[in-house]
Image 1 (cartoon, rainbow, N blue to C red):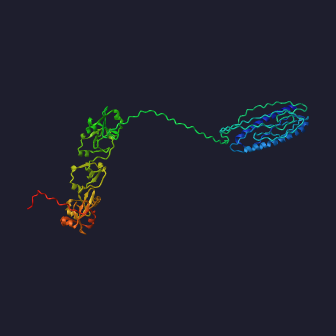
Image 2 (image 1 turned 60 degrees about the vertical axis):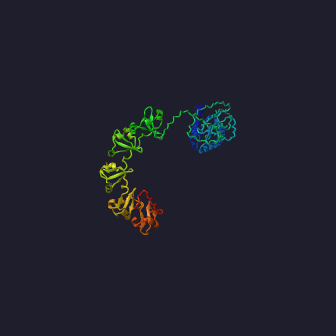
Image 3 (image 1 turned 90 degrees about the horizontal axis):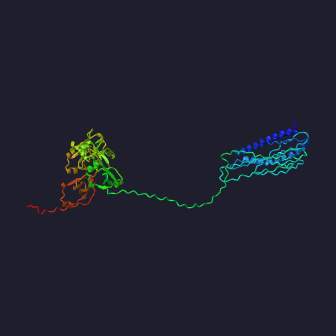
Length: 563
């Protein structure tokens, strides 16, 4: 194999390694931007070897060795800067990498023997735009001339942070500083090494722009802290609120008013309504007929005015008996409610169909119901037990057998009703007629019943009244004590005497009025006219004024004179 073929094969291999080296750096740049991974170590570039006579080996070593040492020294600050940048994982830290690689593996091989010398220490120079490269003094190498070949640079795309509101200026990319000059004025390009004595032919190398796909960035890039800017205070221009023009509306006609109790009549339909408190209550034809209304008793109004008055509950006069035309039930209207009148009560009262207003079932059910109706003072009897009660103020009061005997009640005075209706009436206190004398069966005490209270009648007072057993109603002790006790009973105008002090008094209007000795003599007061009671009972009567005898009655001049 000839030297030319060997050199050509080595050149092709070096070119392949060159492409592989660039591709590796681009992947390294993507990993650096995405993950800020740990320390990286760039691969070493392979030098292009051209076989020259062996006599130039010493000169080749003298030429390459200082350059490799200077390149290694020049890379050290950049490597430390890269290591520090990758270790800084703070938010907002950005690294712009411009992987400009200047490889100057110019090898001059001389001598007749093809014995290439490769400097394995030639490292590519990675330049970071943020750290300046130190200046390296050029090493003069005689008898070597190389054509200047510009180093290909791959621009690094800078992806601006999408979340930074303020516009950011991308960091400028500093071009690669020229490396140490070699004989012939080369600056790190791939150089052909020719035979001595021949002028090196310049090898134009046009850097082919290689499309680089921007490395994908994470959706959440490192946020950059925007410079806080204080917005200039702006005074908003006062805006006058726009008030929409009111839409003209035709006011509704107010409802006409009438005096309460006015019976309105719709002149178009003839419907009647009872006006009260701003509303009209329907007066159905059966109710109007039972009321005996005539046209003169009503006020004719237009249909519009009639409907303008709000409608209220149907009108029924107080105490009117109505009848459900569907069920035949009779009720009495009172206080805004219906009170059912049972058949025994209606029969006892003599209510006939002609005495009630028969209305529709719908109108009847439109009124609330209250307690059943019983006339005040009606005697009712439980059909099951035979108990007789008197109905007063919405309650039933029991009438004992002695009281019923004293009242001399007859069957015609009593209305027998069902137990259900009887027990539905609330029960009150026992009934006693006013003015009767009750006697306690246990101790014989006598009291006079009046207005729901019992007033004790002492023995001297009972004797003065001349009460006998026939005048008394004997009741049990429980029934007797169930009646509230009031003041003791005395006859109005009775003369009383304190059995301890002999004091005299006249009883009037619930008070005792003192009678002096002269007054007693003046009215000729005798013992037969006086009721002597105990001192305790005497002092229990409230003290009033002194007693003054009435003036003597005038004589009748027409009366015949006595002989």
